Image 1: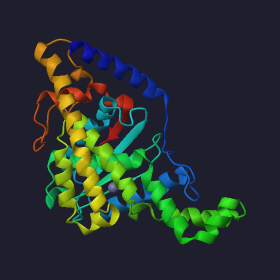
Image 2: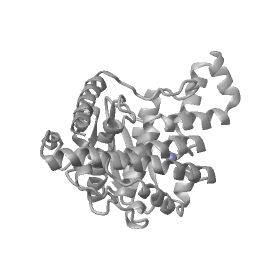
Image 3: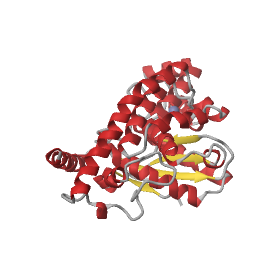
Image 4: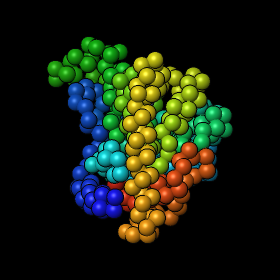
Length: 318
Ligand SMILES: [Zn+2]
């Protein structure tokens, strides 16, 4: 096991070096007709500013969410999920009554991707840390897959087929092109993700949370709670198929959770090859947070040793 652990450490180091050289700012899909990344990120900043103008920020919920997000972000290296993608996150919890969350595309050279957590997740649905990890992980995956931009693009182009056709053919005037871009950008804050997007976000998010030391069973309970929220069901609809896929993927995620716990527990018990906890940012994921379903003390502590600042940074959003 010790040698396996060493191999893993080496693999992680190699990946981190690689991650520093690669910039993947969305672009996982082609065929965008309407919404270029720069237009999407500019509009997203405006949308987030509008949300923050309407709702005060909640510093303690934000601090809790950022701590969880750090662990999830570091888990990308551990699990191999999106480990080559360069990321930067802006995570903010606000005092609204809505039980939902929103994610927005962003320029990682500037603010990064935005994740807004509405107050109903904390005060109404009362999500535990592991459940919040499921929700934040889900939002992260949507952005790493560029789902929000793609969904906004798809909704706008479906509403304006004639204009879209001329933009695709290259016969649209600059004004027409701008009109389509504007229509698509206007959808970013309210997109409904497709069932396919939701199923993919579930699968990846369950692995990310498992690798971060949160028991993936909490993913299911999180969505049982979100299922009672009309707002959440409008943007992230739950279908029978989605539930079935979630349950099917649960065992695989539990295996990842168990493996992460075993690999990180052994070296600590033997006091060999200590994991570099000192390399973490202060306060980032030092121990399992209250309410986390995570059982092994060592797993969450050791997993984020992958130096979050290399794979991506997280803004406190304050
Ligand atoms: Zn979703």
